[in-house]
Image 1 (cartoon, rainbow, N blue to C red):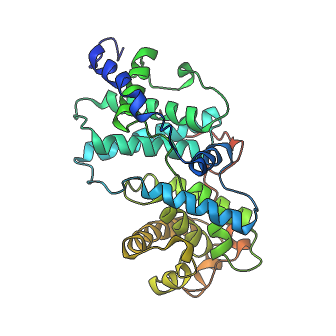
Image 2 (image 1 turned 90 degrees about the vertical axis):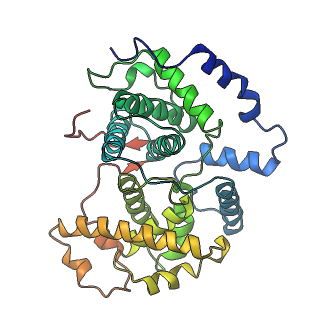
Image 3 (image 1 turned 60 degrees about the vertical axis):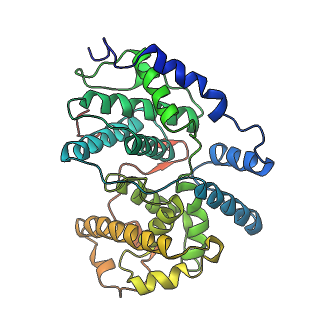
Length: 334
C-alpha cells in the first residue's frame, strides 16, 4: 500500500503550519477585494445578466487579481512527466463525473496541479506521487469551490494507489505551502458571460455559446499547462473559438479591439492567438467527426458560426450545469 512509509518529515509539516499566519489571511485586504473574492466562489460558473456597470467593475476586479499572479512556466521535462500529467488530468475528470463536481472545480484542481509541478521536482520513479498530488489538488479545489463536502474515501483510485488519509492531508499541506496558501486563483469561467456579450453577434443565444466555450476550456487543459495563459485570455479564446473556429489572425485582432476594458498589450494578444489556434484545432477535430460539419466548413473564415450549428456538434462529456456534470460513464480506466 502506497503511503505506508511517507517521504515527509514531521518537521516539514510543522514548518508549513508556522507559515499559516503569513499566507492564509491578509487582515488589511481592501473591502472590494473581499467582496470580489466572495463573488468568485459564491457565484456559479459565470455572472448572469447583470447591470453592465456592475459587470464591468467585476471584470476589472478579476483582471486586477490576475495581475497579482505569476504566469508562464518552463516546459515539462521528460515525456514520462507529460504522460503522468495527462493521466492525472484524466483521473481528475473521471472523479469530477463520479462525484458530480462543477467544471470550475476540476479546472481549479488542474491549476493547483500545474502550479505545484512548476515549483517542485518529482522524480520518474515517484509516479505514485503524481497520483497523490492529483488527489490532494482535487480535494483542495472541492473545499474551495463546492458547497458539499467530499470525504477523502470517496475519491476513486487504482488498487495500486491506495493512500492513507493522513498521507493525502500531508500532501494537501505541501501543496498549500508551495502555493503560499494562495488558493483563491482566478479561472476563465467568470469571464464567459462578459466575453459572450461583447464578442457574439447581436441576437445570439448566450447559453449554448457559453456551454460550448466551457467544453473548449475543459478540453484544452490536456493540451497546455494552465501556467502558460492568463484566465482572461483563455476565456476570450474559448468564446471566439465557440463563435467561429475559422477566424484569421486579422479577424481576431478586429474582434478583441472591442475589449478595451482589459487593456491588453502584445504579450496578451500573442497568448490569445496561440490559445485560439489550439482551440481551433480541437474544434476542427470535433467538426470533422460529425455528419453536419459541412455547415461550418462552407462559411467564410471571418463569418461567425451560427448558434444553430453549435447544436449539431458532438457534445463533450464535460458539459455541465451549475449543479454539476452529467454522470456519463467513461471508458478510460482509473
